[in-house]
Amino acid sequence: MQFLKTLFWIVLTVIVVLFARANWKAVEVKMWGGLIADAKLPVVLLLFFLLGFLPTLIYYRAKLWSLKRRYEPLERGAQAAGTPPGTTIVPSAPAAVAVSNSPDAASPPLPGDAERIATDTKVWPPA
Figure 1 (tube, rainbow, N blue to C red):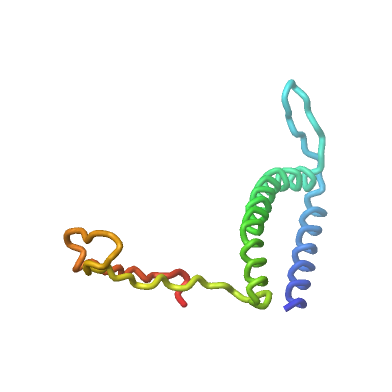
Figure 2 (figure 1 turned 90 degrees about the horizontal axis):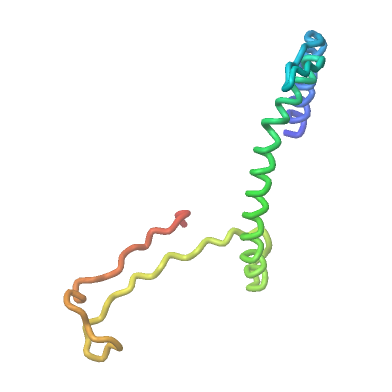
């Protein structure tokens, strides 16, 4: 797999170099105030690619950092409980709870409690 990854980057680099070599022409970039900049076309394309790519990269790196910060306490808690590192922790399904109508219950029964049984045991991801 490493070979394919390296081959991909080599092919991509060759394509970019050939494109840059074929289009190495000066272009005029008209800016504000009548200012005109002469730059090579591949340099201008690279600049605008980075101008669009970097904000997205920064946003997703920040998102990844935030998710890692939320995950680390869970991982430390799992290691403290004796779970080996790298083990996926899946929350268990909530148990079905039956509502009792007996007189010894801690709270007085409400009307219709006899037919109420909690059956929502949907867990994501499925175990």
